[in-house]
Amino acid sequence: MNNNKKLFLIDAFPLIYQSYYAYINNPLLTSKGLNTSPIINFTKLLIKTLNNEKPSYMATIFDDNQKISFRKKEYYKYKAHRKKTPEAINIAIPYIKKILKTFQIPFFHAQNGYEADDLIGTIAKKAENKGYIIYIITLDKDFFQLVTENIKVYMPPFKGNPKKIFGIEEIRKIYGVNNPKQVIDLWSMMGDSSDNIPGLPGIGEKNAKKFIQKYGSIEKLLNSTHDLNGKIQINIEKNKNLGLLSKKLITIVTNISFFSFHEEKFYVQKPNWNSIKKIFGELEFIKLLKIAHQYYKSI
Image 1: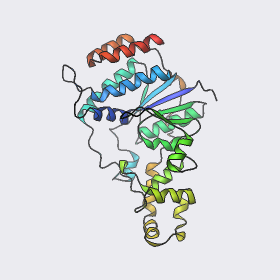
Image 2: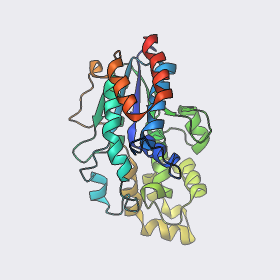
Image 3: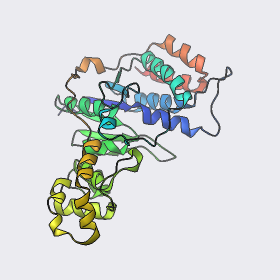
Image 4: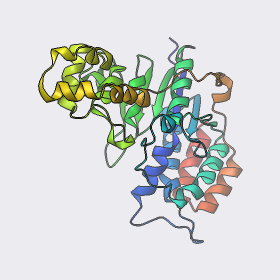
């Protein structure tokens, strides 16, 4: 394994939302009234990653909010509780894409009913097969299921906490699984309220971990309900299809057929300094401009 072949993949929307809500009570406005709250922390993270990690390969992945995901078609309640995207975020996204272009960081959109998670999963697996070590920069624990020796989840500093990098051992300790892939089965049993995934009614984290240790997967649990008794047996047998549906919703697709990994498309190039000055001037990012200049001079 060539350790110089590191690919950093930025999961855009969770970071943009985090940046927006970090200033929800005191939004950052330019002198012209533009709300830069959704942009500021994302841009800080981008520059900090470029400065500290010095990646040779990098990309940012966006959802396609114009299309209904295949998960929504499978289960109409999927993410149904989520509010409409704030208008400030919709306005901010084109600026974020301009910033990525000025730094010459490529970005891609999920398509055809897939979500950003699926595109990231596909890129990560295809890059791993070509000898890369992949760092998924995100605030979303769903990516824990993708962790291998060569795929890590990189959670940036958040709410005063330092960055954390999750590998196989970290996932094992948190969830009590033998293999990170088993977090799919764990969440399929207990559900995931953040995405409105039902799981098996009545199964909480304690029982889910116990079942994972004993059976290893939700399928083996569902085929072994004769070992159980009482209300928990009745609930599981009655809701087998719900558990299997939950697994389908939770599982990140890693083999999107229409996307091919070409490493030259991910190569980090020298940024366009004049364009950085222009967009940062418009956004009134004075301090960030100085930090960006440090990065520009270092490469």
